[in-house]
Image (cartoon, rainbow, N blue to C red; front, side):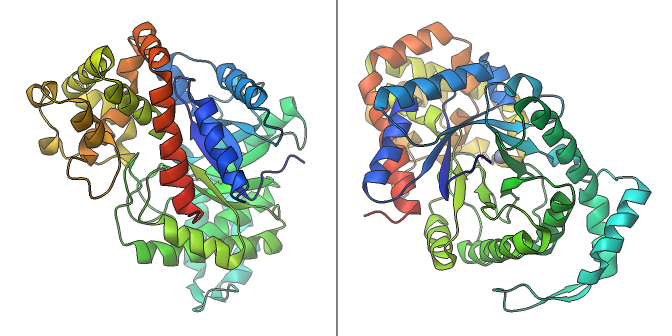
Length: 417
Ligand SMILES: [Zn+2]
């Protein structure tokens, strides 16, 4: 069976030009003793918006690993696919993030629910999970409600998994199940029963992406109480550990953190908790690389700076349209977005610092950062121009991408000094 390493990072490269800079960050971590498996992920939504094919991501991953002489495993993730969108990803991907969010809340057949509840009833009462101090008090009603809410999604995950397996063959790909893009977080007890459902369907899930409490907005820091998050994260980790043994799930099953870029407030907690329990982690960072491209172009000045100013101005006009598909994962205070006239007078430094996530920098504006995060469509509409600028300023842009991935993400998460 293809196995995902203990530590892995999902990297998005929407325009396909930063794979090498991203990989260099991974290689540098390896030199410091932290082995991380690179995974290049791109969702259907991103492919549609940009006009790329899943095979483009494969080509890029193969090319940059070859160029840098990288000999360790790496993967290409069909990110957030479902039954209807998976087909064109199957050939070129070897990691599939099966997104069941849209199936949550739909009811499975009465018979299926009854069957699940009958098998799960033994967990009613005091549910003691090793590593969690207080036992959970689970009622039969709760088990029934969980089945009504999640069983259909688990069955759908199974359908999608079979569809992929039929083409790729057994054990030839990594399976992740995600349910992060929903309004309500899953509790540790819900996660426990969801894992039971996946176990019953015999899905060899290696990473699971729940929705946690607090806000995981795209490209900006965690919003919520980091200590509370730490408690929830640790409970979930213990639930996974117990579920592996209890339901026969793959022993390397680990947590996947979606919208995981820039969550600097919680990285120290995640880092110390996985260390304490000797667990792995998959961190998905998706769109942050596109932001670094914009920052790199701003730093480059001249035409490149003008271009990103135009992108920002356009995104102000189209705020509603750009934000709509990302409603659950962004939080923009429109009144705090700088005006077009204001930004047009900015120099490279001011523009770059407004976008770059350096907490404490007085120029940093998380509202502007989130808007640009979802505004990549506007660069895609001027693709030739954009790619030319990226290529003309390659060194500066790659430097920003590397610094962001290595210094701000990897070093903080894995406590590399
Ligand atoms: Zn996600």
